[in-house]
Image (cartoon, one colour):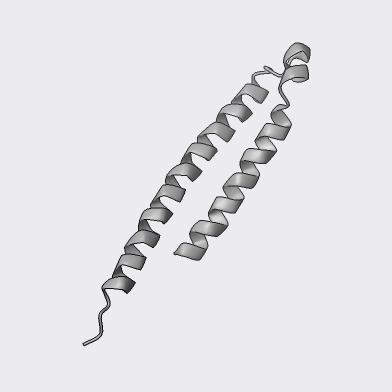
Length: 76
C-alpha cells in the first residue's frame, strides 16, 4: 500500500496557505475600501494630496488584490 501521508500533508499545507492568503486578501480589500472612502470624502485636500498619494495607494492595493486572486486560484 502506498504511503499517501506526504500527499495529504501537502494538501493541508496548501489549504492552510490558501486560507491565509484569503484572509490577507480580505484585509487588502478593506484597506482599499478605506482609501476609496477617504478619496470620496475629499480627504485628498491640497495639503493631504502633497503628503499622501491616494490614487497611487489605491492602485497598489488593487494590484496586490489581483495578484492574491491569481495565487488563490492556482492553489484551488
